[in-house]
Image (cartoon, rainbow, N blue to C red; front, side, top):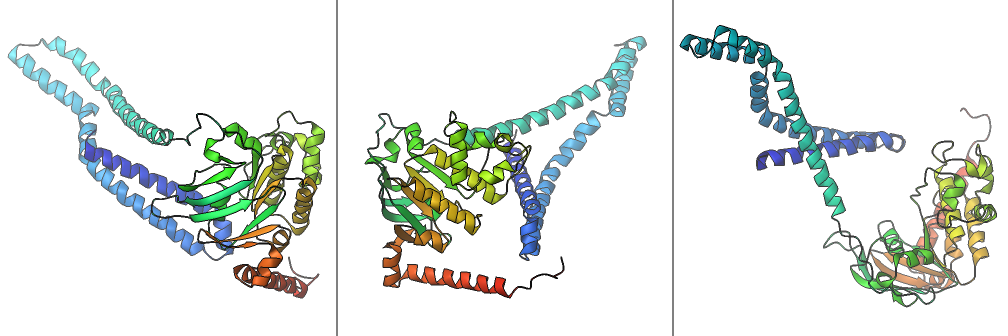
Length: 414
């Protein structure tokens, strides 16, 4: 394939991917954008992607139109028949071919056009498959995180972040020299504005990424020097974006401990305040998620939390793990953590005042750096960024309570 033609194919594939993504985003998010009055903006993004695809497709078709038209004409039965008759007439006139010898060519010539055309379409399919394989190869060629040659064994589960820096793109750091110590037996809450790097920070502990600068140390060993299996036996995590397997509820909870008994699974579900909801499912703990029942966001988070509690890892990471939970469930989760107690190291991204108030240490993360740290009461006395966060959330909670108190009860239209 010519380089220019290959570039056109790559542009076409990219434009097709953009419009497919915009359609999925528009359809799946239509309820949200309509509820928040953003349908016009979302529709505009879809139209931009569609216009971009039309422009690329037009260039692609213009480059192919003459060639395609010529091939269609050359492979059309009437044209082939005309060529055979013309050539045959010349050969018969010159004496190079007997009239009867032309008959097989007249019969077979037009019949060969369909197979040849099919070969052309097959060639196009092969080119498309080759481009798809190329995209898959690009993904497979992404280097995995390096595994240690001589794995270190953590001694204890004290977690230290030493000058941690990280950026998803070169020249744009999300974390800029974070220093933080998570002591065993304590709950550390990280608060701060959206986009400050909180979720990125907690994803370094299960080693979803390696820091571009500094180090994350667990039990005196750098995470990069710890064997993957040992790391995941030590660190368990629950994220806001929960993914459950298409398997039974019991299997989902026992994912990290496949041979756990039913009593242990039920105990973890009770601690996560999801046991009663599981019993309401068609077959209880044997209900297959995604086939026999679907769980809400909050219910899925509680199942994921039960999974983490059953794993009983000494380091527990909660990234907005109760974002969809009601206050009652939030309180149950806090009780569960208190029950586990011991010397467990807990790191939690916190947004609710109750969670923050129950933490031993609070760290304020803004623009990729820790601006304040200490106990909740201590930080309130300083009257700094954390105190402003506390007051703003108290005001929001008060306004919400007043709104509920002033709402009409009964007799309203539905």
